Amino acid sequence: MSWQWIRRQGRIWFGLGLLVLTLWLGGMPIAQASVHVYRERPGQVTVRSRLSLRDFSDRAWQVIAFKRTQDSILQGYYLRLVGFPGAVEVDRQRPATVIAPTGQSRQLPWIVDPQAKTLPPNVGQFDLAPLLSELEQSLPLAVQLPLVNTEPAEMAIAPFIVEEWLQVKRSDES
View 1 (cartoon, rainbow, N blue to C red):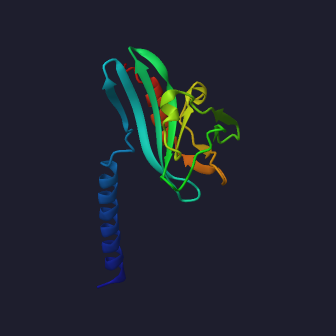
View 2: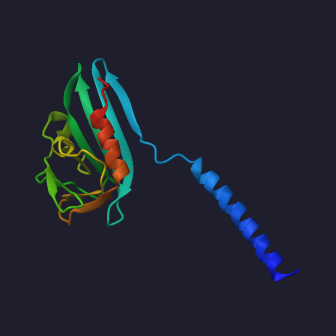
View 3: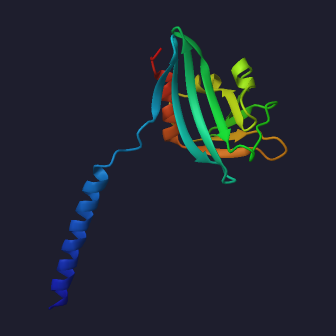
């Protein structure tokens, strides 16, 4: 056996392996949006995106963006951040802050309604409308969530998550 033959065989196997990998990856779906529609009761519809993330302190969070309509009338756009019970307590006296890659920030006020008042202390619910009114494209964001007796929770929001939020906004379900 010559080195040329071995080298040629190696290139063939490498090329075949690369082809198989390309075909396999090419057949895999790109991150699919997980936007869902819920008909909660007659006349009330909720369109929701929900994902699990970890903040920069490695705490787990459910990040839920949703809109609710009642009898085809938009009730609002909301961002609900749910931490592990007993591990965090959201400071309901301060807004959440969303930061764009440019450094610009937008404060999201706490939702003051009867339903939000019944949420447990590990849950924050904020008005997402101010941010959605400005967002036109998917871009990476950072969220700072105020916590009681500790530093704010900070988490990165990837562009595909922002795209889901925009899909919630664009949804015409009602």
